[in-house]
Image (cartoon, rainbow, N blue to C red; front, side, top):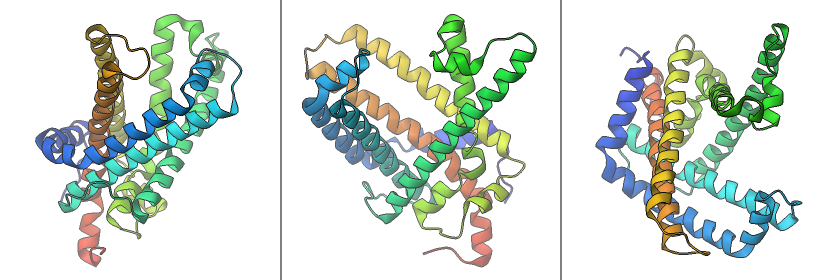
Length: 282
């Protein structure tokens, strides 16, 4: 079987799974969304004031920092639940929501590891680009990053955001195949093996994944503007907060499924033929 090399083809196939199987996606994502929302509102109820104080620039408190850390971990775990379920559905046809098992825990840890590599890659890339631009009298991207892109205005913020997003996604174009492998129990596919399989295809993979992430960001901004215009302001928890949070998580689930779908299609084309010759994992 010929492997898909085009970013467009990968996106078409991944979107086909997500949009063509929307009922399956809703069934698989609903428990993870409910889990994330319950914890989100519990954290907000317990430590909401501390988080607001930190967000307003006041001195961080231990409770506020703990609340933000818990919120991030809950979101990452929910994403892992959705992604593992979707990988198993795309590659094995399994309709098994909320796969809270050892495979999901390994997936979560690998997801965090790849995210950390992405952060390191982004900072290192901005540092190198800052040096190169400095040689020709350009701005320091690293300084703009530290200042939130304020030195370049709106165009600078957008440009810096895109550069950072692209750089932080680079590790997935090397090691991304380990994620679907972990999801379906293929312990033989290591990071080195993923890098070997993706050699010569990394630009196509990177392009597809970056487009997915950029599209998710743009749709999230648009959704936020629409909901902000039509929903009344809540004082604390209310219907508007619930609808906004639910819509945000639903959009996250779609974005996760498309991202996972790209990696699943690559796994199908690049790894499954090798497993067929040597035996499929249990």
